[in-house]
Image (cartoon, rainbow, N blue to C red):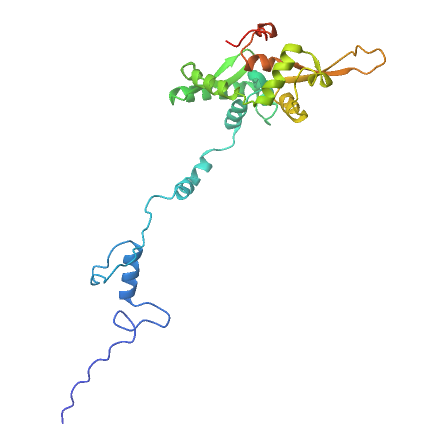
Length: 254
């Protein structure tokens, strides 16, 4: 008696098996992946009607690019030379040279002669790498500045920062003060200036006007009288050498 061989049962899992509960079959996964990539599944018959296609932006993520360079942070070690570079970058008010003695007092165990050596190393490093700035010895210290061929760009930026936007009320107040200074607060309205106190305070904060106290002409008043007058900043903004360069207010505008 012969027995027919039993047919091998298909495994319940694997590629040929039904999808697990809550899962997707291989075909469904392929279709989903094709839709995600904005492509048509090559094993699927063309869809009937209109089918929405998911578009994926394949441009690089700038945040990921920035994070990929996080290891560069370890390359910038905090040492006497890098500290000196940071101090030179910040600089002293008025562009005064930073002396090696002053810097050495900020670092434990570093002599002023070593600061001079670090400054010279930075100077050579900037020159070899073609940097637009340089470290130079000036007077009793060191300064970090733009190279001569790049200083024109610094001058352009500095000129733009000197620009001041003024509305009609602010210009009116400046004109009244400039031609009648010093002007007491209570006399502004008498001269035809009805600018609000807020505008005057703004002009003082911007350095175009300043308050000075002058002796009062009234003998009964012992206190000094606060008056407005223009500043050197006013001359700079309006490109005047002195207040006497103002045109005659009775002349027509040029």
